[in-house]
Image 1: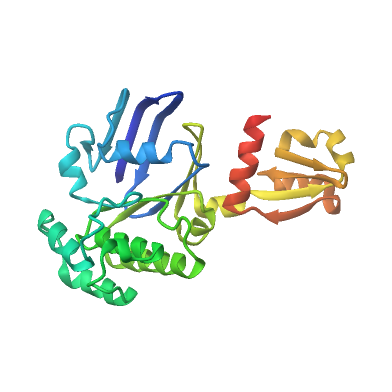
Image 2: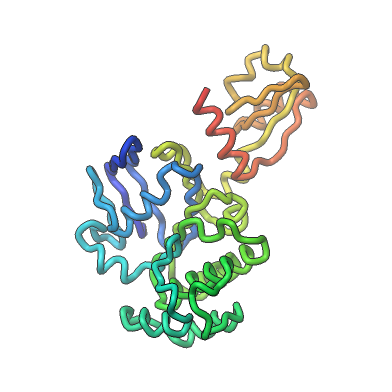
Length: 286
């Protein structure tokens, strides 16, 4: 079953155009949404939540139109992004009291469990929380009403590695005990190397990759070799070639074929999501 379905979507914002002909997000998984800043990730999330209206096309969440049933859909979504929208002068506890009544499924026991896990001070004002504590609190608020869909927009940006891992660990632990789907937008691809089931890459408003994470791990490699090999027709099997005086390196999905043809003349390394994003971007510019 699909939790999100996008068809014929177009949205113009100034000189930027988001253009997604067809996209589905599967229920019960963490789907990573990657791309450079300005690629259209936040715009897509706002359209999914019904905060923006498409110029063309339709987005369905839980089988309902996000533009027509936005309020009902948002009640089933946990969202973490910037800004959080919480009143900066209110304390952690006051914020809970203000927000909880809006959700019929709010779970105080779950809220308390996660507050204690992160050792957050309930008497602190929102403005007094550190950046990391603020993101931890936003995630707790997003999870405490037991949403069916979690939308994360750069939830670990500018955080230190310890806090980033704490947030990811909580997210994955929560998903193990809840029937929930997560759509995780970020340019910090290392987070998704650890957590994702599927990867979608957005580039200049268009989807350029949508693949199973396990298949990605077996498919994409960084290949390195001497410049002389580029004169032997290898270029057609490479993505985003980077040359220097010592040779070249590039992304490839043809490891076995290249290995059979050139043997030890080439060196292969498994590509990370960051490698893929960099080399696909470079390849599409050339």
